Image (cartoon, rainbow, N blue to C red):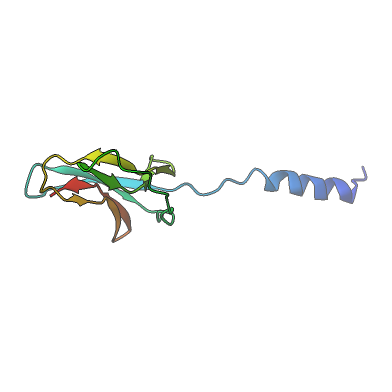
Length: 114
């Protein structure tokens, strides 16, 4: 039985599409802080570059703009747009959430009031 060399080439190209991209692995671990234990998710894939957003007009003087950020879903990053939030007290200062490089990956530090 004679095989066509074209058949071999076509079979090779067909199998190339079957290869999967490696999946990103995440691990979770409990971290004890000064308060109750908090859950930290270590993401091995670096977050994308933060997007530049147009900040809309403030709804009032008691509001603070919180910039958008990349949220990890467990499989990929998704963009969460910035928003205005009400200041709980006149002296409260918003500390923006951010990704921190740790050994083996990246950890999200949530935004909070000080």
